[in-house]
Length: 334
Image (cartoon, rainbow, N blue to C red; front, side, top):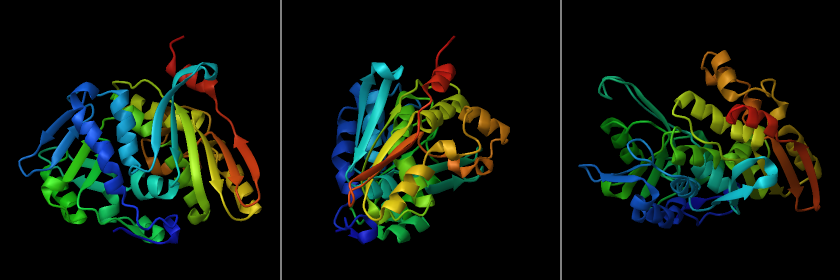
């Protein structure tokens, strides 16, 4: 069984890898219909191509989003004609700390040198349930959570398969035999890649709440939505669109426990509009900071609009707002 403490929502017996397994099975079984490729490496590791040499699909991205959340979240596509954009993702979880931070968050740094990677450096941030097997990030000690499943799945937002040295590191750190590991690859330039990134709208709010020092054990439930842009064949533009979808179109409602003061402060401090960099496309901001993520104001990485409800008092607070005019100016031809 998995270990855990009250920090992770008191859900000590939940295994994100085991809970994600049925969703992964659907992705593999329906691979042809979903436009994804499945290959088994010589050593027995399964690689899923969500859009590098395959077409991929939004439907595949929805499943990959749920895999990333460790089977503890739902990701759905819906239409909102009144919201000035055709397709929206809705994300919800009754275990937002485990789903978003112990699983979905892209926090595991995986790199290989030019020599190790066959001529071109490789870098990726691993997300999904296998992170909780390796626990290579300080975050897991804080969450008091570790998974002990017999099989694992990791998602990499990349445009080429990882080199053998990276696969070997994942296997070693997760203590898995090759046949028990599945790695899902989703370039942001693909339908599945764009979808699974926008499906992080709740996770972005959870990560920001954590950065703001809110007690994670007090977050009980969460749901969120964001508009789903069309991917661009240009990787920089595609990445900009997925960020903009959350920063300017993301709406999140967190249900919490504890004091009203903390809940109210969370609502007020969470939205992206608190950032000095707010108001322009992410691609432009990134370019102006010379493509250095660390120069961007961290307050920007947040949903546009937030509701926080305190279940102990029954009171709710609201802050921020979506900017569909900006998104339409960025995503629609004049």
